[in-house]
Amino acid sequence: MVVKAMGWAHSFRMSEGVRAGREWTRGRLDSLPWAAAEPDMVDTIVLAVSELITNAHIHAHSDAHLVLTWDGDCLHVSVHDEDPTLPRQREPEPGEVSGRGVAIVRTLADEWGMRCQRHGKTVTACFRPADPDPGAAAAEGAGGS
Image 1 (cartoon, one colour):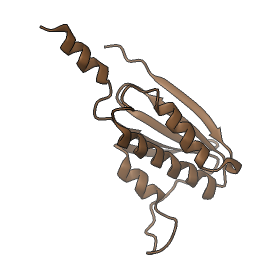
Image 2 (cartoon, rainbow, N blue to C red):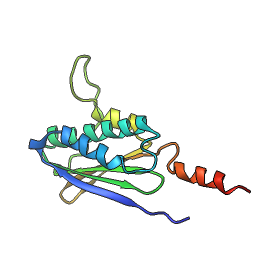
Image 3 (spheres, rainbow, N blue to C red):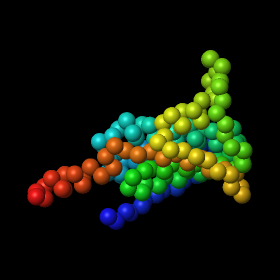
């Protein structure tokens, strides 16, 4: 089996807001073979991107550098910011409007992690669609036995 990876990268300035990141991500996901069949997965990924960019802007006071990488199994969503402080999960009080981003990403992602780097940190989440190559099953069925 040959695995072809594909990826995209874009930086979102604090002045652009999070909406630009959501729209850009949705546009890239539209090109993946499973996206049309799994709109809930697309929405899940867009929500996670929104949380990660928000954390970079609000808590790190930094631009967000987003990288999406599809490796045939997992869509890796990585957001880098300039603050080396790793995010921590908080227990917000009822009614608080922030403090849930880490918990949301942990819940949505199949895997996730974070690492400090020389100039900041990167948070990465992995999302595995149910059927990453819907065309393969159709092609196998058409070939007969």
